[in-house]
Length: 290
Image (tube, rainbow, N blue to C red; front, side, top):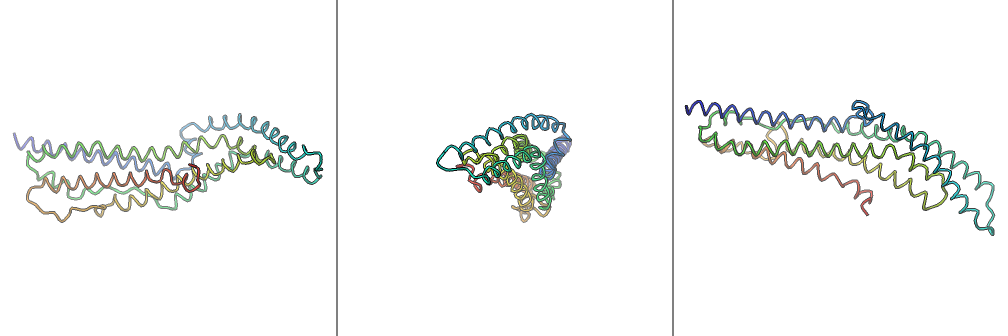
């Protein structure tokens, strides 16, 4: 009876740990897929690109009208002072400005998509790849434990079941937040570019602010990919990870098995912390949080 209970607990614990590992690997692979796939391709594959295109077409009409209004604001600011004559060259430059503005408005979607495609290519150069949590020797320790040890080991196994998938989910959410920032930024590019037509300093600041926000989103994705690569190399690897208890030799296999699973929990938590630390890097670098 005790032997049967021991075998059953051993199988349950190994199955749970293997299932948790598969869930974590799939979440990491999903994160890598999000970071290395062009946002346009991802949106097309998930059926939301038509919504973005329709919204962009609607906003282009609004942006063209705004460009005309901003052009008039800039023209009036230059010509309101009757003591200073506005030159023909200045008038010509205003019309050139509105022509350039209309080109940016019409091609805004393509311009932003090209920027994100370029950065996605850079992310691919980081060679982000999934690595496996080290379980070397853990199965043998579980198999060799007594029935009482197997019962006790259920508690760290349950803790592992909760923490590791949760950390994997947090990493995926970080990548999805970057992706949704992209989709929020893309349609409004036409509105932001409409400020180019104005010679007014206050109105024309709208475009640089938008560009800085775009650069922040790009930097967020790149830093997350680099952090994931560094974290996977340091904490999640087949060589034993960042913290190793390989030197512990005891007759009771409960202690080394528990230390191994705690080590893996610590590694996964550290990986999540490293990835989370990159969330506000772009805002601080570009001073967007001021």
